[in-house]
Image 1 (tube, one colour):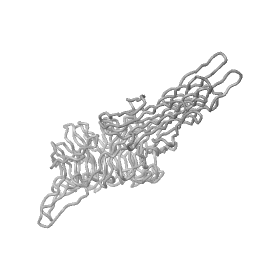
Image 2 (tube, helix red, strand yellow):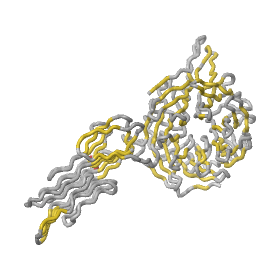
Image 3 (cartoon, rainbow, N blue to C red):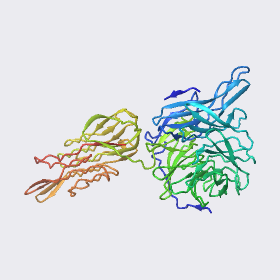
Image 4 (tube, rainbow, N blue to C red):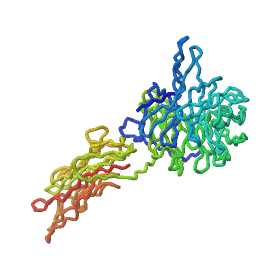
Length: 619
């Protein structure tokens, strides 16, 4: 085993549906998802069907099923591997821990350690990793249970295809007694699959053999350990309507069917495991059925009360979920669909538990992977990690995605006009970048300058330790525009916010000429100046944009500068007022990006100062 390294049905009818299309994989340079690793199909095999787990060392661990290719020339040693176990850091460094080799002399090839691990791993209380292979084994080729100790595979058990079952496709779960529990989707006493328990030394006991009747058949997913000490799972088929079931089973093997899927609005054919939420309820998915015909996300109590939370349509919301859902630290339910989405390559979705609103977070493009059929996992950095079965370099990917409401705890604010560099801290892979263009200077003939534009990117991809160039725009002097601000200047992707125009024109910085996910135009300055009797006033400056467009200073009768866009932009400068008894200037523009007020023609007074731009980097 070599080590190799590489870089009664309740249907929620009031459920809201939201598509975050600006965040989805639709060709934008800015995305909440980063593809960390693309499997090459070489020694790393590829085709990961299972999700990842977080090890006690903080790294991620998973399996690849491989493509099942065996090189066999008669009379020559058999060659090939049929799947791997791998480790990957949060930064994307992949290491193959072990592979499942093909041994023997052709045509008598064998797979002694198993083949085609399609399920994820579990790390036991002893620190060792445990898993299953769907095929192979030293004697019967019906699959195995294995243990990894110091990078070496120990075959704990070979399924025989008899009463013990065959073809385990499940991840194991460790019970309170320290034993490992799982399922097989075939064989058993009634050829309908089993639930088994195995010690960490390899002693296996069949707890239950499904009959294929009302109790279900073909459990394709693993079990969830409930807070009550019982185990919960699903069967793909069987039940009262032959559409699958949700069941409870004790550690002693007593089984209770909690729900029989009908194939209607509740869905049909659940392939994934259930998970227990913080509210004590069970959450899961069905592969098909439901209101849109393409699967369902459901909730069921441990007493069997069922609620359909969302029916997939195989459109933008995704379709045909194969993976279990996971509850995030924010309390929301996250999951993936194998198909659907904008590009029909699958999606990542979330359902908020405070109002049961469904949101499609991301649509895969193919180049970043497609077919995410493994469950997500949330790591110590708060982000979710997952796999796609195909796509990337053709053999699947490992990806990272932000949660729905990412928390930005640190903000670096850069206020000094001019160029500079910013170095990304360690373990930071996305930042939020906000740029404000500088305000335009007031006109010497009285017109107010325009406010700077604002551009924002919520998910700017970064590399820890890398340096990024920036430019903070300088405010316009009288009759001159404010200059633009830029992050990652002259590189791609670049975030740009344009500066405001000078007085006499006085238009705000234009969003259309800026770059970013969210862009707003600065407010316009007031035109020229006005007056009556012995009172004159000049045009006030336009407000800079923020989370909305900057406020306009629309007429000379408005003494006050335009307000900054909500939550962010600076205010435009207030106008000069010249009276028979003297002059007043209420205030200059405020940062970031407020436009300056104009100066009164024929007077010695100067225009009020515009404000410089600004850049904020949050992580």
